[in-house]
Length: 151
Image 1 (cartoon, rainbow, N blue to C red):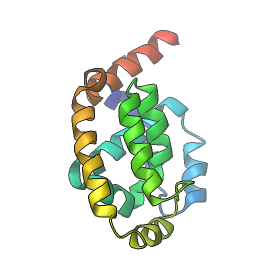
Image 2 (cartoon, rainbow, N blue to C red):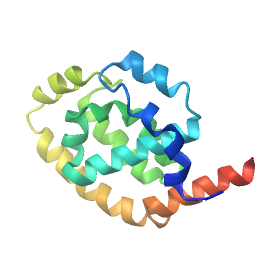
Image 3 (tube, helix red, strand yellow):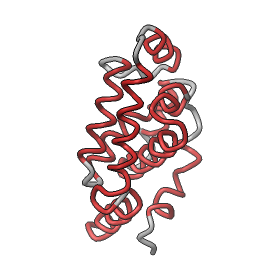
Image 4 (cartoon, rainbow, N blue to C red):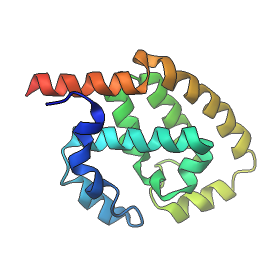
């Protein structure tokens, strides 16, 4: 058995990415997946979106639905500063965080200086993602090893 996080999440990948257009479908799907896999996949999607286009891209896309699980996941990976940055960025869009994409779009449209606020958080996120707890991939791999050791 491998300790690589990609292999750990692979069996549940298709179920996780299936229904982001509907909050109810997404929550039902993730309810059928082991929680450690859910939070790892949420971290993977969250960091991919942010690294590709910043927090604005994450919140604009359907993948923005996974933000609460990503915050939980980065905390579980031993990356609390990264989790806090995501929480801070998410609070710019609303509290409680709107899982519904249209609600996020409405909230983002109402905020005049959202671009500059999130841009500053983007830069901090990139820095933390690379170094906190050895970086995302190393932290995720250690997390999976710890799960495997616990079973």
